[in-house]
Length: 98
Image 1 (cartoon, rainbow, N blue to C red):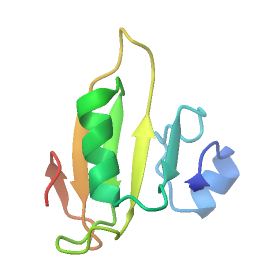
Image 2: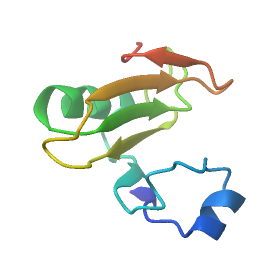
Image 3: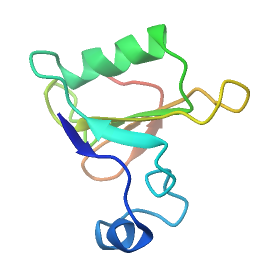
Image 4: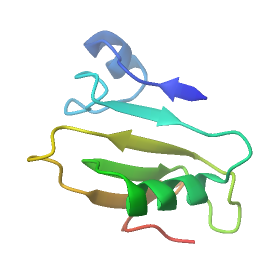
């Protein structure tokens, strides 16, 4: 289930997205996959796919279905493979935390 993908600058601003959001460029999406935990989906992407940024967003440790997955792709040459976990209080942690 895709909850956010391309957003116009106006929609991005109203949704609280930052000025540098890749949603405005159409290169990222926020989503969940029914029947799979968001942590498991993020871990699979991290280990199996090329990406620029992977964020397990609004994630609460101990609640594997909490939050959602954000993933962006720029280009094979420019992808940073940055992996982050963002908790509901907006604490940002490098990597995936379980």
